[in-house]
Amino acid sequence: MGVAITLRGVSRAYGSTKALDDVSLDFAAGGVSALMGHSGAGKSTLLQLVGGMDLPDAGEIGVDGEPLPRRGLDAHRRRTGFVFQHFHLLPALSALDNVLAPVLPYRVGFDRKARARELLDAVGLAKKERALPSELSGGQQQRVAIARALITRPPLLLADEPTGSLDSATGQEIVELLLGLREQYGMTMLIATHNPELAATCDRIVRMADGKVIGDDVITPAADVLDRIGRLG
Image (cartoon, rainbow, N blue to C red; front, side, top):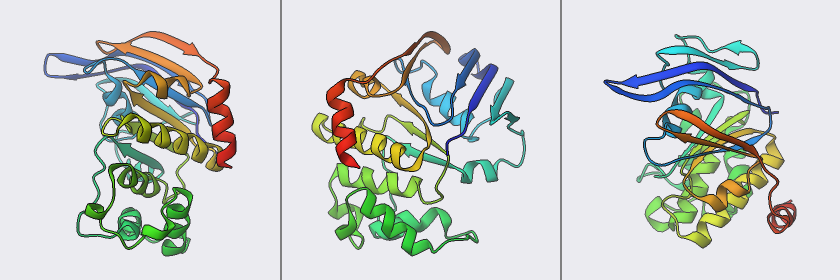
């Protein structure tokens, strides 16, 4: 199941630039929310703070009603999946080994290789597990990156411009894949994007500018999108 995320009066500045300015939001468990806005709006900063990759200057972030600590965030980060615009695959490793990479340093209570293979199958790359990143298309590399993000079965997935490096058709495939995986695994998803078509498939659009929330709309995805997602199952 996904987790509920709360932000209360969260601010973060880098020098004289306010990346986030007194932001308060609630994200329901299992929901998919798009964060929209121009570069510098604060989308990526919000994801970094929610994922425990950075700390706010002021305010509080909560996960399922418990405040994130200011220290000892490794456990939270391991329970959070991250997907980025640039795939950040290790070029010398196969697709399978890239998926395995996040859990290799830790003891886990599951069969690492079995789960990695299951995830590559889920993203449509069961026959590509031995391929190097250089042997994969951009869309295939992003699918590997998504499988890698899910290796710990995280209740929270944060995606920062996941279709930004892809052509429109491949980007649409990635959108449908992400939403289909949400249905399968029940994650809470926050997606930072410039892409209005991607945002329109989410449950909610939070619009940001200059570090502030300027709009917050619950939406209903178009029927054709829902139909395609339903066929993924």
